[in-house]
Length: 351
Image (cartoon, rainbow, N blue to C red; front, side, top):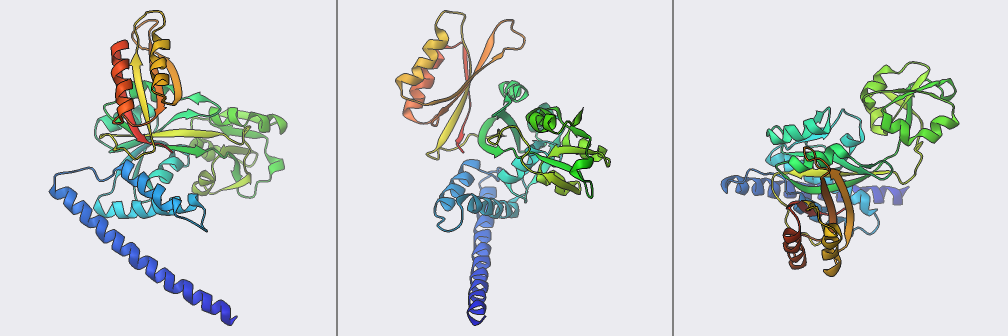
């Protein structure tokens, strides 16, 4: 017991030092905010800088898991950023959704999160200046790309400044005291029902579509359950009857962050492009061949109907690298010659 007390005192002394160092960091962050204000810079958040700091710090971890260190530093940066100015961020709501979890994971607790009913309304809020940034889903590993996000990116007056890949861990949620055996009906968003179809069939549950996790959770009675996150269970005072009920263990959603200024190079970056091509044989093959010649790794190629132009398409491409790198500059120059139009949606830190 004497040795135990000695170790506890050691921890107390370390904690005191940690808090003192956090205060020093906060003072430095406040001074940076002051200098930004004097220089006329209104943007508080620089996603490339924040992600680079988190990456460097977490890579130094020895005993603690790197992911845990990254989570801790996300909150530290969020708290320090809040001393300068509280950032307003739009997300696809309501509370308790995976978009809400993504926003908290990326920006931390000390952020003013503004919920939106649709992806389009989040983009509209960004365009009108109501929020500084938005975080929206762009693709899911089992459901594919989110068309509404891609369509809005084409029109958006901003840049992709970051991304977050979030594991989707569906839970069976019910009112407190309700046993699994009493559940007859699952009330949930259609996507959640689809992603948990095997579990639903195996248990012979009836299903009922609902517009959101929040509305589903409010409709529950003593014979129904919903599908959602552990955060949703906490927010709506529900009980988790079963965890990880999704059809696929590796189900993930990729979110993108849209901001007003392009990101600086970090050394581990990704670039997203949008372009249109003339109706000539081999133009897509020729365009993609440009990346191969420069030995640039393509991460994603997607086509979407060009709304307002019959049988024409927009092409979305993600690849490794930053637009300021010489080989990427060469690629963009060549594609501009081939394409009808080209737009760099953003170069940003890759997860």
